[in-house]
Image 1 (cartoon, rainbow, N blue to C red):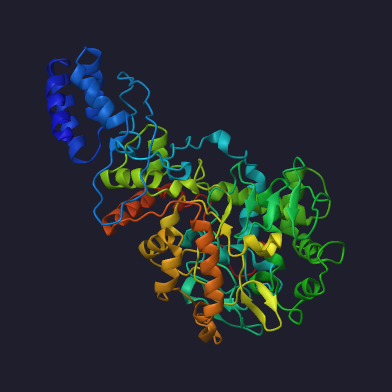
Image 2: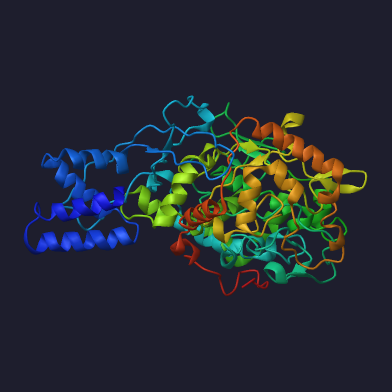
Length: 547
């Protein structure tokens, strides 16, 4: 009914905008309404409001600026009500027609008369500020050019058979397209990757390869699923890591420090102690110092004349390449290549374009009754905190016992606090629909199933059906053993129950799940996915490049 009233007012506004201009405005308004873009309607109401029409003022506030009344629930369970403060849009600058304003702020479901004010955790959440140039670190293009080559060069792996790009490939959304990947000792990309060579892989990488989007943002303070690398809140520019202080290195960012760690993982890049000197150093816990794994890798890169010359030209000083130089270069490339801030949602936040009708309704759910923004908050869509969300356990896990890796307790393995067991970092969401499978172990290859599980993880664990995407591996018959371990699943379920007790239970219908998916699609930055520097044809080491 309100939409019909708005259409009538668009016709009324014709009298305020005479001639051909007015007719064009009305035609554009109707076309936009059919597409779910209310920009023309908003402008018409603004013009009528300025002419003194009280009905226009009422509709303007009712539809665009104030909370809408909550509809009757469609199931027997009454959802937790969501209250939202009204947020007024800036006045329309009708002379700036080259940049159409976004259609509307999300209209939240308000508490109905007589309802008790809900807990703060159930409130609707404000939209974040848009990402801007000031949100990101300034990129050194020359250093990023060197990092571009190093990112794709297998020289940084112990067996010289796997590169950073193998598990974070541009053609796979900056991930590897599988639930749990294969690192050193395999060939190919994605689910076509297979064990090969003298050091053929026998174990999967224990966690899903995280996406790299927007890791160059200034606000990034914690990395890895369990947060085992983070900025030190007590020391400016200090870092906390499981390898102890890194202050002796000249690292440009926490992202540069993160680059140092995959090269130490036996399954990812280092290899086993009997395979190569890097794997042996890691096994003997020789990481720092002149004979440590990092120094051995830096010496490898320094021995390649083209890399030595490139770093010398960039630095302006002749000296050996250090591991910090390598880390800073790769970080600079990641910051440049995997920046994503041009999605439809970003355009909406900048008030330059409207969202589709479905994406707009999905945004209402995300920032309203769905309560997604309680964790996926801020401009990066992550609180960078840790939550136990009951993800099904798969594969080898991260925790050692007498039989090897058997489970993954997440943040608890870093803090050694049992209260943190099975909690994992909230991921950022730009390009999320292109970075599946989802979850710290990639347990879900269907986003709709993932969302249903996320709403009620305790129930989700009980009904989980295997859907992981896993490359063939001789030991793969044990991949689902953890999720069949009743005692382990009970521990994960208990942790999720404690976590969910702190937030309202949200029940969504299938059509509402589809709306959330539409909003997640609106977080896709197509220009970023298309790539900037792309995949190099060759690298200075002469080793094969994963294309």
